[in-house]
Length: 212
Image 1 (cartoon, rainbow, N blue to C red):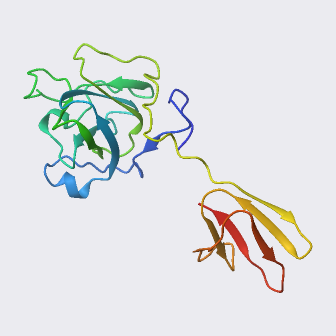
Image 2 (image 1 turned 60 degrees about the vertical axis):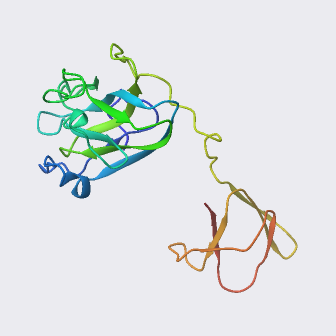
Image 3 (image 1 turned 135 degrees about the vertical axis):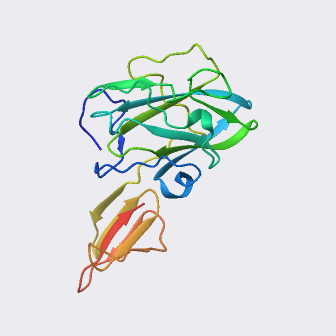
């Protein structure tokens, strides 16, 4: 989604529709609540303090859950202590006491170095969420739009491109990514066995092309 200035990047995620749904019960929420997954490569295992950048309309849509590798530990259940109505804000506390730390700071425990899956579950619908920070520093507190986005291993994926030029018998398609074709603009789309540039002979009928 877009709108609500104050988020970082080009948009944010929103739990919709905002109709009063609430996923609180554990472990039921693990299989019933909508979930976002992030593949993260950690240098070390151990406790990570969780900070969430979010926007709530009011107290009925101001919480979520965090976790790792499909489990939502008690220390990251119901992150909602400080979301402020109609303001983008950083929240790093749970509603209750964290058994790992003895305070209310939200945490997850990374089991070991290497790739792990960090999870975010919806608790209350209507919450907007756009950035997550994991830190080993219990005294850390983000401000503004927070830290820059972490590096992506191998670099960020590039956006596929497609261009067409006239030839004597049809079109020459120059593209990056995988070329797909369909007889109608709504599909179904199938992969074309082609490398760039690809020459297409114009005949009767129609054909549509795209890249992915």
